[in-house]
Image (tube, rainbow, N blue to C red; front, top):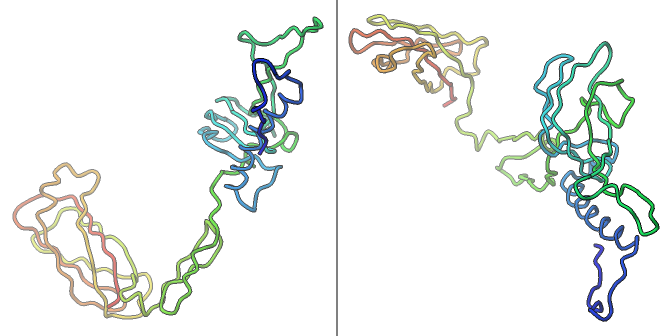
Length: 270
């Protein structure tokens, strides 16, 4: 990285700042940010893509944009993005532009020693507005969500163990049958409502299972509209008549109560 050697600079041997020195310091700071972010993005990095670092989320719908403040990385540079609300008309979409303004608090404009008046304190931001698709550095819809690059180091290929396939972040875990002793076969729910004195609830699978030899794990769940969760707990259930096509769940209440419940279940092969 770029570093100034300052050991020889003293009160009696002072350094006169040149344009190149200021550029050197500015480049050193920018290059450090570039290196860290590009390494985190990984081998898919492209200088033509706008990467969202944080924020910049559109909560609007259709042609109405309500975009939160945040920051993006584009062309090796970090840009802040101000919050904005606008409506695109006709064929317009949200587009991104680099806009330069000046820092004017005791700064720009600056009078140089030759009396030239210039602006040197640039504030570079990306501004999102309505515009023609493809006419600027990027359409809003083309922004890429920033995510850390994860090297392919999880190679679980030893005999009898799970393996990993696919490309991050779309990874798939493949578990050999020998190590997955009780695989899940199906899951579902039954709307019960109020339980009668004793009531059967037939459960039919949409497609026949490969076996009728399975476990049934279930839970009683209060309906969101239930006003008496205590009464919802006054039930018990049993399973019978298991086949590859379904089973019967029998539910009984333990007293005269009014329930409003569902029964959720998951099937595991034995």
